[in-house]
Length: 178
Image 1 (cartoon, rainbow, N blue to C red):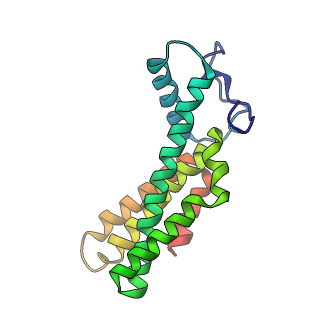
Image 2: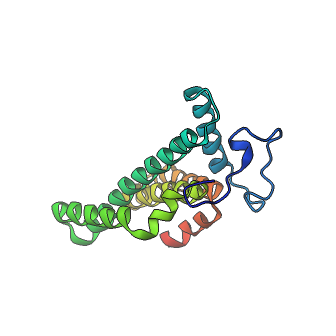
């Protein structure tokens, strides 16, 4: 079980003979999320000699906290980019971006996503969507006159699809850009 008491997939802890995703992901295709859980499992096998689930949970929760920290940094960068375009004042944009990231990082709605190991897909999708939006604001808008627009827009599209491979809700990114 994770922090909230939700049942974790048994194959992650190595107690089931045959790995299966059926029933756990509602038959969704989220390979990046599953890969990060498998990486955590491999790390726990190297770090701990036993299958002590209390030690294993620490690794999974540490990864979620690390992903949330990355999201907060990206939210700060995105907010700074937006405020720099709106205010033309870099110092004010930095302060407002930091304030937005502070609220984003500590808002109670985010605690469930961080504490619940099985909600990792949301954090991974947010990372890719934030990167896509930052690339669009920082590079695509400024490069629309020259030839590098296609390169940056392709990177933006790639990040969006990486987000979709984490969680389907990342497909909203093009609508945010429009």
